[in-house]
Image 1 (spheres, rainbow, N blue to C red):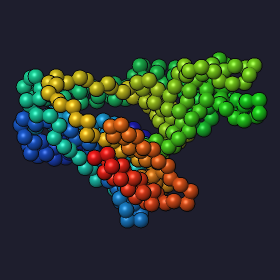
Image 2: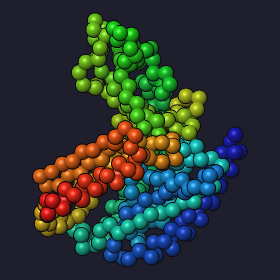
Image 3: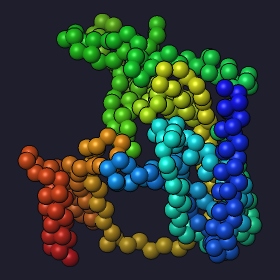
Image 4: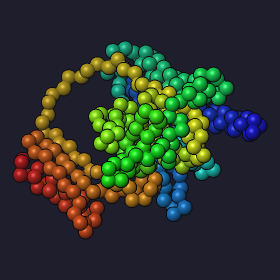
Length: 328
C-alpha cells in the first residue's frame, strides 16, 4: 500500500508540473491591470455520447497576471482530487477547463496590482493550508478530531433509533442519550441526495419536536460514501461508513475595493425558475415553477397537471412579455 501511495504521489506531482507550465502560458495572456475570476470545471464523456460538466471549486478563484503559478496549480490539483472522490471519477477520462471572465481593474482597488496579487495569492495559500494542515493521518491533531468527533457514528443511512409520533409516523431519530433530530431530505443543486439534520428539543410526553434547531448539519450522498458539512468542517465517509478525512473550510477575505458611484435604476426585474432533477447526477432538470418581479408587480406560476416543462416555460414567458408591455 505504501508503494502504491508513493506512485500515486509521484504521478500527481508530474501532472502538477505539467499544469504549472500551462498556467504560465495562460497567465501571460492576462492584461497587467485586470484581475480575473476563474472557475475550474471537469468535462467527461458519458457512454451515451453526451458530456457531463462538473464544477470542482466551491468558489471562483481570483487571479492576476502575476498570480503564483505554483499556488494556482496546487489549488487546481486539490480541486480535481476532491472531485474524483466526491463524484467517483476514478479511472474516468477527464478534461480540465478553466472558465474565466474579467473581474476588476487596477483602478477599482485602492492599492497597486502587486498588493492585489499578494492578497489573492494569500487567499489561495490559506485555503490550501486549511485543506492540508489535517491531511496527514499521523498528525495527533487530525487523529484526535476524527476519534473524538461526537456524531461520527450517526450515519446517513442510520442516524440512530427511529422516533415516531402518536400516530406511529416516523418523525426523526434519537442520535444519543440526550439528542433528537428531525431529517429534511432533498436533492441539492448538483442533483445529489442530501439530508439536512436538525437537532431540536424533543417532548417525550407529546412525542413532538419543539422550538428552533439547536445544531444543524448537511449530509450529501456521493459516488463513494457521503460528505458531512458541519460548522466550518467537512467530514468525509467512505462506502463502508468509515470516517476517513476532515477538512476545514476557509472564509473568503475582504478586498480593498473602491465603492463606485451608482445611480438607482428601477427599470430592472428578476426572473427565477425552479427545477427538479429527472436524471440523477447527470444534470437533467425540468422546470416546475417560475416567478418574476418588477417594480410594483410580482408573478408566481406553477406547472399544471399534464403540462410539459417546455410548455410551461413558454406560457410563463408569454405572461412576462404581456405584463411588461402593459406596464410600459
